[in-house]
Length: 368
Ligand SMILES: [Mg+2]
Image (cartoon, rainbow, N blue to C red; front, side):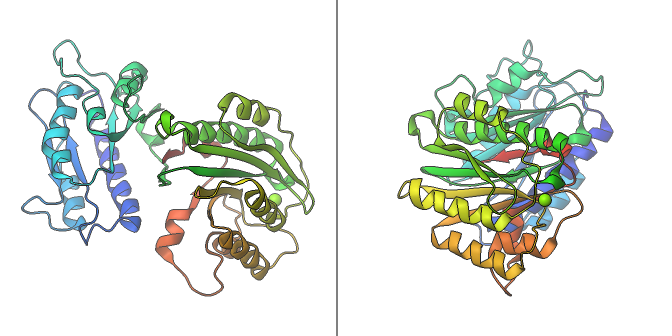
């Protein structure tokens, strides 16, 4: 009831968009990956639509079924719904790589529904609780969201995210890796960014660093993060070199000063490649997230491809976060793929992320 009919429709569109994004990466048609959707309200109202249902043989059927879900508009029994999801949906999924996204205002009626909110944690599922303010403009209940996302348990930590309203249900990206990882955030500090946007970038980078450092079991102790800012040809600053202590990295990011000069993304990438050559661990996933609009002075697409290929030879995977509407499209593609002619749409969709502006950066949700 508390989310409202209009928001229920937005939530369905969001779910369909998530399924679309996943379809680019996951092999649903071959049955390697599966997806399902549960809607719930008060007690015993749960409805499940999932691949493997009698009338759902492919992704298109599933999306149709999601569209047809009717708003239940009752009370909020989140614990019972999670229990239902565990027994009826997740039990069907044989893979032990499970992700659950729980969309709620985080106001479960815990007086009437005594089922624990943490039931998905016990079966080694990464839980993202997406808390969204209700139609009465009450903010989501962060305490419940935390419990849903397995905070304070010995289970795999999830992620708890809050949004003021359904209109902000925007950017959900996945960066998948298992095992040790050395991640670098390569931050555009050129004039075209502007000093205010640079401050927004710093906030975003801090959030991402925290996210990367906490996405895996603390006991694995295996993710290290570097932060490099760049501007012109000889302007790269190593702010943090493969560290694990969030407080130390956050302080370095806070202290970053806007370079406010030319843009040479190529030189920046070569600098980072060298950093990995010197300081990365053997066997670690090497990931670089480049913030860039693709514009780079005096550099051809061919130059970029060479720098990207050098990075790839070092075992580095490049992700690009393209910000703004004035982006250099072919340079961005070159940055992501490093290929001259070949186009790989699926690869690009999973490595090139777009933001309309810097403000939107703070809405990004990453699942790692
Ligand atoms: Mg620039």
